[in-house]
Image (cartoon, rainbow, N blue to C red; front, top):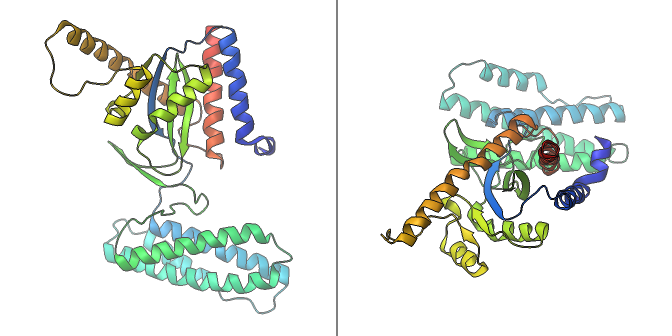
Length: 329
């Protein structure tokens, strides 16, 4: 893990380039066709509930207060009310069916304890900044204050979402991404655009925030050109990429796209051939869904355990691509 942190994302990007150069030298990759899709790679976080997030913040604050007290050798201990707060949380969690008023009451009580603990930690922090890891505690304290403000605002406004909401105290970069799929309406983790070229999967875009994948088509084409020295002859995507701007851009570039034509169907032979070709390519598009599924189930990307999530995804895809190459060799 230490070596991985030292090397970082940039090193593994270069490692990907070296692997790709080797694939091109051995002629075991064809670059004529590019499939593009987006997915969410879930982070290793528990399902976020408001009370759960607040409780984790409170526990961390109490632990840091006790740690600093020990180092300062304080005679009069700070009254954190940790046992009472823990009792409030456990009493709430033990209820099988939680009414709206009970949820609101538990949040209100826990936020009061968190507010008190934040003030207590700030006072101790001023006295002990020379004998503790000040930068790390300052960063986490900032996250704790942000969560407190967000949860208080949601409680006052009686809403369940807020802009840039932090859903995990230990991974504050994770955002809820609405997918609308059956069983997984919301996923918690980074969104990624990927390209499948001749059975090899490449990461095109990584983002902790939600974005419309249709807007990054030109970016994926540029990356393909950077990898292979030319743009693909054919692009296969789903209908979200079929905006007017994307269609015009593909036409200018001379790239054939497997997108359903706009307007009414024509009865001409050329139109029938085009529709037949599009249907064949759209059936083929299921391949990228399969490769994304394999990357998640068999290469550790179903739940990202590294804190550097981009590095986790890149390593998983590198392992998958090397396995594909080995099978072909």
